[in-house]
Image (cartoon, rainbow, N blue to C red):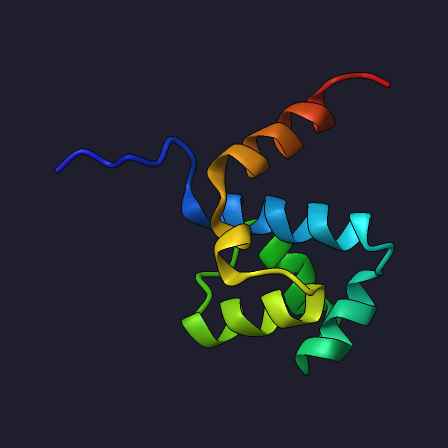
Length: 88
């Protein structure tokens, strides 16, 4: 079976969390508090090191005020990753 994703889904999720969080002007600590988790857990998710559950996906979306599907948008994540690599 061929995967339709070109990026690791954990990195897609992490890039999208980071991008929505920074757009909202929230710290990792603020998002963690809204989710009921530790700041280190949010950091780990943003780095693509967590294989999150559906419940965590839902909590992250609620904390950021977005739809859960928005956190799995590969195109949005790719744009975020590309903008990090482009010098300002």
